[in-house]
Length: 314
Image (cartoon, rainbow, N blue to C red; front, top):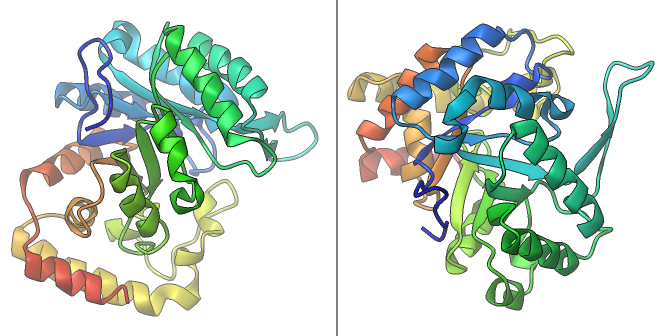
């Protein structure tokens, strides 16, 4: 693992995704249960929490600080910058746009430190690539922030790693890559994960349940209102359900074979499917979900079962 420890803490293999703390884009969220989920994660030894400044327009970072309390010093917090926003005056959603410039990074970092009520952020990601910014300038600013002790590690999220010149990884101390990895969208970032490994980056895979699709709780008749992003995601659309149904049918068979839930099989596949993910980021709205996610660490899928799943992806 290329990550440097924070207070002698390294990230756990299972990372709790905390976007629901922002209170937007996931439908109705019971904040009390999300709080309990984070506390339950700590009980299980999950010390790593993934968030971004744009989640809830800063609210998610403040809520995470609040629920962690004194445990902030014992938590490996991951946050991100690179999406600016304007408050939703006279409209339902905020106006957002990319800005990964060095100038904005310095302001965003100080704002995140303030909201999280910490002196140092263990891992800081550039959230999305910004074609209007010079990446090397931003990385140099991140190096300076690291020298000042404001961050311990930094990395790239959602970037096309293959398109970045190799010398960037040799000249700077980039520690991590974060991308999407689940059975439904397996090919989306696979090349980037593989390239990240060649640069010795620690890899984080988000979306292991494809926004809940791979929990087995939804079908083509499930409805989501416009407060829930799933109403607009392609893998929840009717046109994709024939392929999705084949995947879910196989997961149900494997669920019975391993005596695990469908979601546990799906999370386990992220570790075992292509062997390119070091840490899996899974969002949870209830303590029960945290327990099930944690249990996914206690078994492995056989090579034959992995191959059966992977055959459905081609």
